[in-house]
Length: 377
Image (cartoon, rainbow, N blue to C red; front, side, top):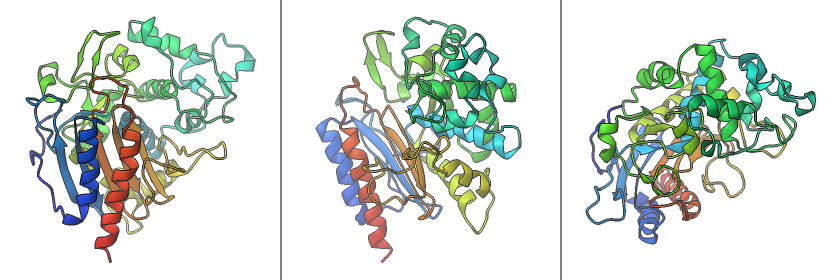
């Protein structure tokens, strides 16, 4: 991972005055303490029309300023940039059948369970769609201190609903999905995604487990006073992923705005009806962008889609896919309008109390889309 990739600093790429409203949203957010700084960018029809940054790594006056290339802990964006992207490629290559029961890949998931738990009916599709019946989040890290013990505990968690009947966003499901993909590929998730996704796309600042010697280059995510008892900087914030030594299907990837816009471009190139050279095919993108059961869920396969009061704001089409990260990051891709937007922050600094990001995201995205709409007239 190269933390100095694409050194354009905090300059704006093709920035126009029309984006002033969107930038003002972020300036006000920093002033209100939503986060100490941020990096952002927007892609329109494969071109970066805005890329920039503001604020600092922390609220201290001497803290480094955020650059457009600053690398952040992108938290649950890992689910789409690494795990879902891997599932897309493996499905595209005929290696991954979405209807395969998880128990066929990870037998320990079903061994010893009573039939009424329906574990044998949980498929890869259920994990991607967040409707497996598994719990959303469990603090396994408090009792389990090694990757193996945490994985065993995860495999043994009881289902809370019958598969396919309830939408429940599940870190647990994606932790198991990441492990299942490792079994299918015979390789760790970090190594496989680096070779098959990040390197082919030229994502030079993206990856798991950054070099510890470079930690000072990353905006810290929090002052951990309960588990690690130190500043969390340049290591994954999510505790379950940390127990997995920083490599997990639900969290662990670090990235920056230029790389995420490049990733989004690959998705848009695949979705382009005129074709193009992309890592993914149009059929794959369409398959994974389709909303899943139960009725009313906004979840596609791995991806989220806009719902009422969406973080994407008012202007992203129904045919959009995206995801959020707990650390304050987001990626939204409008497959119809051919637009992608990235916002990276460390809103959990110095602790996780502030929820202002919920107001910032839709307002920021509205400002971006309204600026583009004005310029297109």
